[in-house]
Image (cartoon, rainbow, N blue to C red; front, side):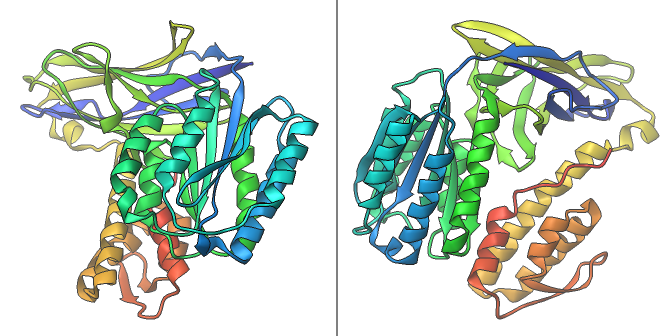
Length: 432
């Protein structure tokens, strides 16, 4: 199957004399979704015949006993039934150790039946050491190099503190090998812990407040995973000599800082991973590049951003955009902030003030929390981020969205607090 890519860049290329910072948003869309006004290119196809592997990683520690483990088993059973017959799958269960409940196999009728039979005997006991779960999953994925590798991890508790170093090492080993969507059921798990795993493995993290909702969430994750058609796509950024990339962030559909995932191709070329892509998918990336300052009238190519597809050692460029810098003494031109750059800068600030506000609230510093969450309400209103505004209203009383006039609620459900923290990085796209 051929996946079509299209890319556009949005920026104000005009800089005041002496300025060095260039900001640009690159919109990437598959199947010709993109419709920008500048820096576009004709869509080019990338064809992938790669196999797909879907791994299920389920917490079976003692805290899962009861409704959680029953609901998880029912949801996994449904996923097994729904797996297409051309997909490979495996199941890892984990507590203080990891068990390979169902080894890597094509989703044939007999393989599914064997997996369902093994699932019936699963019980919950012992503690939580996620590093062992990930290591075992990695072994399964490594049996099929080059496959589109997706995993789902469910837990309900905090990882054992003794596993911290081992988990970091496991994540480093798994990075780039497979993507992983993480879900926390209930309210006893730690948001930061799951977000760390998800961001490292280019997946998503979210809360499932009630065990009864596990199946619906699992179905949605499987649907997304099965829509992926191509992997091994890198976001390649060329910058001129003397320039420095300050950051590279995915800013839509969620904020994911990939700056530290950079892989140097040469002194002036860097690759950033993007994970797997499906048809009808769109993402936005924010580049901030520091260049050598120019004089009035100078123009330069501040960066060239492209998508590169690698298959069997052969690279194919499937999209490309240019990032410009033009120095001017026209203050009207240089003072204008591109509306797309401004929008996502605001969304990044929104995520930050929510995290900071919730941290202050947890410490009992309600005055500081009010200031931070007040700004969050303003930013949500300005950007039209209705989903985040709905979550904020469960934590604060909003008197005036435009001015950010709020009152902190003292009695808030734990699941509402965690939902706001977990989903604070989800952004709303700018309306063209």
